[in-house]
Amino acid sequence: FEQCRAGLGADLILCVEDSLSKIARNPEQYPIVYKAFHRTLVRRFPYGIFYEVREDAVIVFAIMHCAREPKKWRGRA
Figure 1: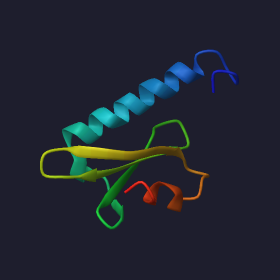
Figure 2: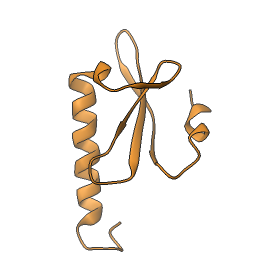
Figure 3: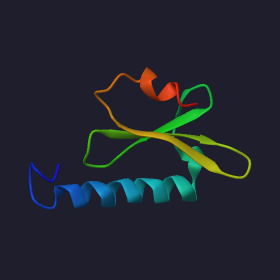
């Protein structure tokens, strides 16, 4: 993204961090998309964050471009 426009890469990182903060505050707020896995979309960018809520932690399995094959992250579970 940085090659597309100066500062866009930094904006992506900030938006991902914002999404991760929202997940940390309330992990159940986003829909379950596969088995026990939730997904949220990154604001302003075509990325999704896939994660699982466990008793004592939230485990992020993938942050990936939405155009990629969704089954790719499932192999990480």
